[in-house]
Length: 153
Image (cartoon, rainbow, N blue to C red; front, top):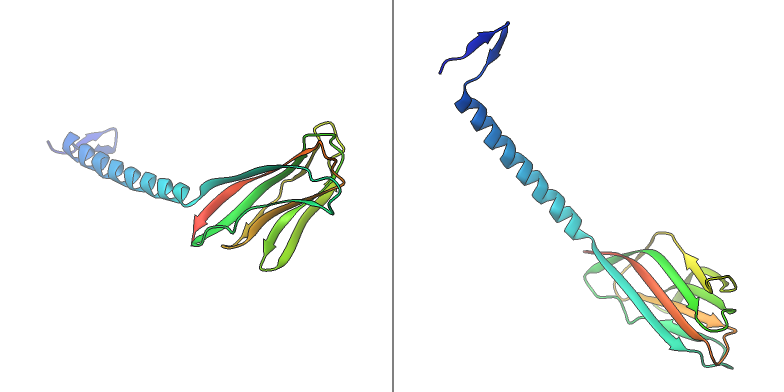
């Protein structure tokens, strides 16, 4: 079918429109696959642990094992909770090599008995997440929660 003139604008044939449409659909599918791959590059991760306080010690410590090789970790949130009396000091951060990199320190003396850190921190493989509680009593249950995403190197 030949092109037709309609009010000064050219119209293409149905066959040509279908071909453009199929090419357009392939292009959209390709871009969608790229977006899916970009999304999959960032894999959510969580760390959670709890301990019963050993009252009378210098500090109660929750520490992860070394982060897995081949990944970079992007931390968004760290939360320390004292599920007992609720009044203790929490020092949160990570251990890199032999150095404790403190990100925040504060009291759990609030209605939720938590101390929170909501910033972006990048960790490398073998770093360890760490939270130290001080001034906890023997009946306290201490919790440490971290979340973020990890990406392959």
